[in-house]
Length: 206
Image (tube, rainbow, N blue to C red; front, top):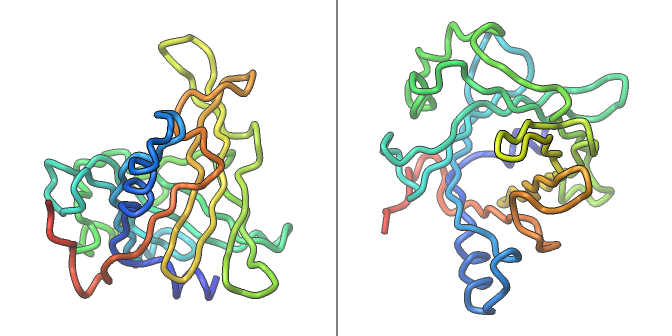
């Protein structure tokens, strides 16, 4: 938990990885799509654990028109497993929480009834012996989502690796036969690298 508190903050992107994939002319299904991500520790008295506001945008800015995804990461100790759980909390009314890291008043009264989550989609994390990475998997088969297009379930195949200035994840969805439905077929995780601290503010958009 101490490492997570120290490491998970700032403005991240995977530009170097996406550019390298493109330069190498990798097959489309092995390329990593460009991502911009904000991680900002926040105080939410009504929720347990260490809370991090997360927000994705298409250009790395704070412009609400370009924000594509937002919520909270909740880190807490699972005493039975002696591991850290990383749980994603989704706002029931996400449009009210754009740039909530800059508006602490909107999070002050947030409670369990204001968010949704699926405990089957938790990651179970622990540090490696050297203490330079906190990593773990989402237990395979426990996180499922209905695919309206096929009428069949999609299964999360996911892993997280957190380092001092990097937040990496697999972010892959497959069908019941293991066929890729979403994400990269590459064995390389999506590697988001911190480009700026919260104090420095968002990067200039291009």
